[in-house]
Length: 263
Image (cartoon, one colour):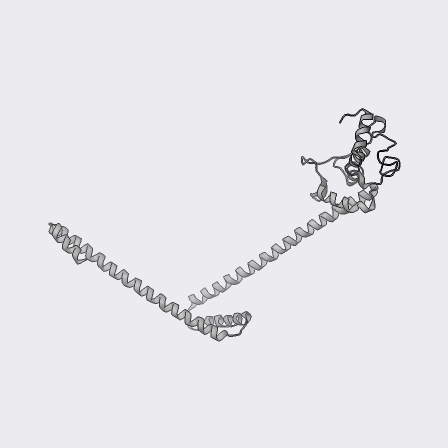
């Protein structure tokens, strides 16, 4: 700093200007010294506070020993109550109110968190229950319709699986939609479970139903034999077509040829 003052004297000839700059430098120097001392004081306080906290922690560890968290919590509550009693006795109203507010806010936050958890648990339970009831509703109606339509009893579990993947509950009512997302219709409006089981299910999954004797079912007249041709106009039967195509592609090809149906 002294070197800087000497430099000013050597370079600035105007006495007033040199004096003004020198005063400014001296003022800044005094401010820096003050700030430096403040920083040192704060650092000293921080070190003392840390040392005090370390000592308190060591004392607490030594005092708590084998105590459980519940024991420690009760002890801290007692200490906090004693602290509030001391503040009240000393007439430190502002600090006392601050302590009460902090405790109230902490309790409120804890209660809100607990209530939110209860709400979340109830909501999840409600959703799980709704899902279960929905599935039971669809399962029961599908099974009843399939039984009515004559599905083989041993195949009812397959029916339940198909219904689970095809039907869904909308506004409390089971709905069947096609691949485009359109509602599948029946004879009068949206298709019913009875129509689904008797028509759609029989057409797409004929193996779920008993096969009539003499219809070309395996074992009825031997493989490759059938008394009817479901591709002929007078004997047309999509269910039989699907079954024969699945079980005996060569027979299906021959019957199509006999009926004049192209591949």
